[in-house]
Length: 488
Ligand code: GLN
Image 1: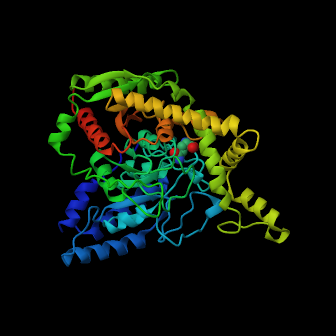
Image 2: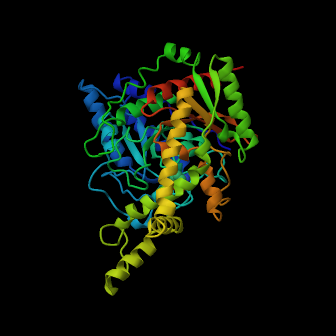
């Protein structure tokens, strides 16, 4: 195992560059050098945008020298999951269907990062159209776990998590439809934040399951994630589902004093369904030890129940695939990417282009979703899944009346081996048992590192808060982060 190289935190870099103590050009050079050194083994990036990042760094240095201020992310190298549209680099969603596609516009989050001074150094690998939990469904190549090249980094934001955990960038964006930010964060040993549905604009995020998709942040620590969140969150007229609530100053509110008082009296809800069958011993031990430590630190641990959570994976795979079957109908060989069979007429064009453009998992999902929505099955599957979703939200509301935040493992196991689950989709789907319900309920949640198993592989702990409760969530997560770092 190669120890990762510490990249310097988001906040340290931004504050040093904005104050003129460090030059963005130098930070950029160092990040590109780390990527060149580490990425040939890890393969987190589909595209490194070195020229673009260098040009932005030079512009930023001149602006700062001229006294024009640097922004909240001045000179911070950030990687972007390749399902977020960027004008400066191809955006493929790791699919042959979009190979070589360069969008004519930037996602809102991309625009906001750049306005805050961030240096966007490249596009990261993912499971094709964000469908998967290991990054092995990328049409191009799998990404490797930064601590053990024989293992997966998780997914679908596996490239972003690996880039952060390997010290190539201090932060990255991902997307989370059923766990795709939190699960790879847990596997790789970094922080993964999935905000409330609608907290961040989805404009320019390539749609998978539109009622579940949310942009998320991967970072080395909780305060860094908060800093990135406050830059990218907030109303956007270009996404009708984006909340009109203004974001709070999440990172500034995270003073040492507030955080040190946060644990005392915090009502910590432990959903008993998330500690049952399927949970590995090492993960259980680590999370239970963290709960005990929180109790000793003054938290009030309460037992809560999410009785409908056991139906969440089933409901998710009906709803997400139904939405995907509709969202992916636009890849027809006419508008984007690969085009095959045009000479044989429109039907052959669509059939052959989609056959050549989509990988096996994406085709499986489109067929599942089309089936679930078809006449005669709609009520039996889709309508029923929506009812389960409603009941699950009620379960969370009830649990969050008894507790301020809920705590659980992020994943049932630590990172598995490359290839281990490829022939068994159901076991791959179960990698998200603890994360999926949160998307169905639209709640904010975060995964933070919580020790390691016998093999030294990272373990993740998940905290879940009420809708738009990011402030509370981040403060609680920071309190846990400090508590877990302290001895005893
Ligand atoms: N692994 C889940 C899926 O394959 C979640 C993916 C995601 O959050 N994008 O659908």
